[in-house]
Amino acid sequence: MSKVYPIGIIGGGSAGVMATLRSVLNNDETIFFPGTRRDKKRSRERWVMKVENMPGHLNYKRGIVEPNKESLEWLSEGVFKEKFHWMKDLGIKKIQTKDDLFELTDSEENKYLCEHVILCTGVMDVQPHIQESIKDILPFANKQTADYCLRCDGHHVYGKEVSVIGHTSSAAWVAVMLYERYKVPNMMILTNGEKPDFSEDLKKLIDLYKIDVYEEKIDQILGDVRSGKLDGYILCCGTSVHTDITFISLGMIVYNELAKQVEAKLDERGFVLGNSKGETNIQNFYVAGDLRANTKKQIYTAWDTAVDAADDINVKIRKKKRERLLKQYE
Ligand SMILES: Cc1cc2nc3c(=O)[nH]c(=O)nc-3n(C[C@H](O)[C@H](O)[C@H](O)COP(=O)(O)OP(=O)(O)OC[C@H]3O[C@@H](n4cnc5c(N)ncnc54)[C@H](O)[C@@H]3O)c2cc1C
Image 1 (cartoon, rainbow, N blue to C red):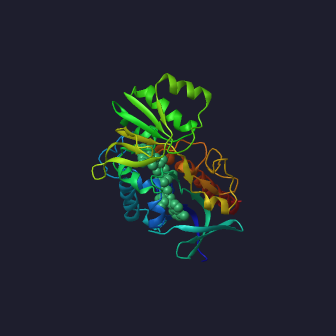
Image 2: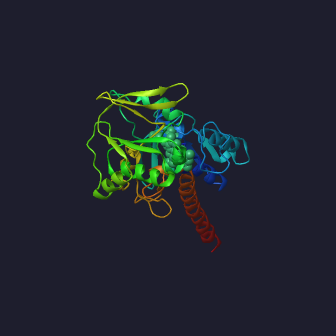
Image 3: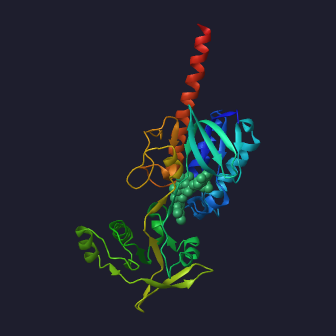
C-alpha cells in the first residue's frame, strides 16, 4: 500500500464523474470509486431517466448513466489513461486520516492512500410507503408520472391534474409553486396519514388556490405499472382521488457516513459543509454534488461544485511542485 494517489474520488454520479474528468484532464493522477451495485441502486444517478432541463441530453434514455459512461470510456482509452484508475464496481466503506493522508478501505477490504479526497456520494429522495412498502410507487417514478425535483420535472404538470405527497410546509410550497407557475386545473396534497404541518401563510394560500388536502393513508395506486400511466389513489377511507401526476416531497436521505468518519462538519439536515471550493473543515477533504450543503440539487450544480474542488486541488498540487522546483533552483 505504499503508493500514494494525489486524488481519490468517491462516487460515480454527476459530481464524481465530473470531478474525475476535470482532475484527469488537469493531468493529476486520480483513483475513482464509482460505488458498488448496491451504492448505485440507492443513488439518484441510477433513477434519472429523461433530462429535459439541460441542453443536449434529450436523446439519452438514462440521462446521467449514459453520458457518464461515454466520458469514462473516453478517458480510459485516451492520452491521459495512465493517470486514470477506474475502480469499477468498488465502493468505499471506511475512510480515516493517516498523518497528512487519507486511507480509504474499499468494499473488498483493499486499502489505498490518497493526498486529497473529493466525496460525491449524493443523496436519495424519501419514498412514500403504501401498505408499508415503497415498491408500489417505483414503476411510476421510472416513467416520471411520480416526480421529485421541481427544477427538473416541474413542467410535466402543465395542463394536468396534480397531487403532492407530503405533510410539511416544504410539500405545501411545492403544491403552491406548481399551481402558481402552471395554473394546473386541479391540485391536491396527500399527507398519507400524517398530520399536516403547514405554516399559517401556506394555509391561507392553500385555501385561496382551492388546494384539497387529504390526510388519510394511501391504500392503493390506480394506474398501469407497465406504461406508468397514473390514474389516482384509493385512500384508506375508501375515497378515490384522480391525479395524472404526483410530486413526492418527503425529504432526502443524505449519504454522509464517510464525511462523519473523518469528522467533517455537517449542517442541521446532514449535508456536508464546505468553503467556496468545497473544501471541508478537514484539510484536503472536499465535498461536491448533492451531498454538499447550500447548493441546488441538480446535475449542472454537481458539475460546477466538482470542477471547483478538482481545480482547487490542482492549484495545491502545482504550488507544491513549483515550490520544490524553486527551492532546488536557489
Ligand atoms: C427522479 C430524478 C430525476 C432527476 N432529474 C434531473 C434532471 O432532469 N436534471 C437535473 O439537473 N437533475 C435531476 N435530478 C437531480 C440529479 O439526479 C442530482 O442532482 C445528481 O444526480 C447529483 O449528482 P451526485 O453525483 O451528487 O449524486 P448521485 O448522482 O446520486 O451519485 C452518487 C454516487 O455515489 C456513489 N456512492 C454512494 N455511496 C458510495 C460509496 N460508499 N463508495 C463509492 N461510491 C458511492 C453511487 O454509486 C453514485 O454513483 C433528478 C433527481 C431525481 C431523483
